[in-house]
Image (cartoon, rainbow, N blue to C red; front, side, top):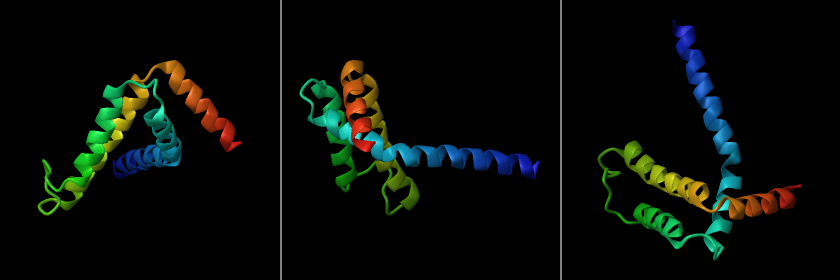
Length: 106
């Protein structure tokens, strides 16, 4: 039974590391979408609000009380807002920027 839980833990970590490896590309894509005038302003606003929420000292879960949960909450808000920006932006704009990023990388 311990082997099963260890295997599940390893698989979760591999998924986490694959996300970490792709994180710079997602951040580049989000940066380009933020500066594109064709991206809806409402989506950009959520990213800006998530950044401000991370900078403002008032939180739902204070860092002083529960350090790991407080910092994680700020990060989760930012990641979800970036995901929202990428997923809900017009697909042709996202594809255009993703191709441009891929071409620069090679």
